[in-house]
Figure 1 (tube, rainbow, N blue to C red):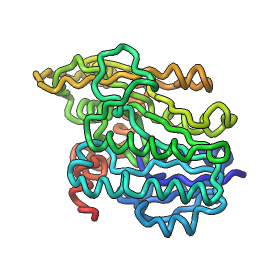
Figure 2: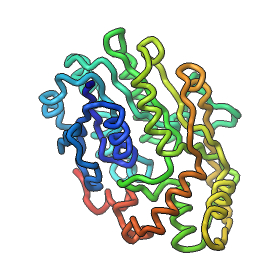
Figure 3: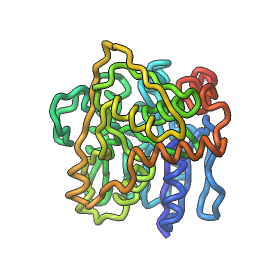
Length: 325
């Protein structure tokens, strides 16, 4: 059984990914600060280590013997990063090169890094592909670009590096986020029976959390020559904010009103996922609509505690509360 270390494995995506990895036969270790709680299912093939990514000595002590590393840990989204830029840099960027070196020197053979589709900035092209010049607009995305460059510098035949650039993730997780566009609108629609959108013509790429997790497993299953040094966009559905709002509205079990408000923020993001489809045969199996339906079921079952106000579902609220140093 192959051993895999998932750094940041207790997060929104990581919690679901760990389930999928264990089901696929991996021995999984999660390294995380657990600032949003521990929602991982207990399993004999799961080891949990509470730790800070900045504690490189601790990571060096535990990393020997792992075949693969999936690096998910970061202060995620621009508002949370901007809350304390020095903290964001200390987690998202400062330890990254040393972590890569430690992984390589410890015999890790595959390293997968979760970057972001935000590295492309605002683009007018209909299909934004991996070869485009990157135009990051924020510190969060700028540091993603710098980490990509660092990782590829260490890539070789024995240390296989792959970069994933996800779209915005949507759907249900036991470590739920309700501060992502599809999840925000679903929460407001179900619990307020009304949605307010700013603008509406802006494109937003999204990926169902199931497919996000499956993309990592798919990369892990590929022969080295298919994934070594490669960068893949993952996000098959590019909808406008209005289209997402209408999809959410139509998925509710009752009438929901949609209000449009003018905005000066016309940022529009859209990506092509043709490369990951053609090169390694990965395609999404679930949709944004499926994600909304999953959230409706969760709301009906009262799986979330105070979903409109609970800080645990909103990264920036939680970061303000804990004041991480």
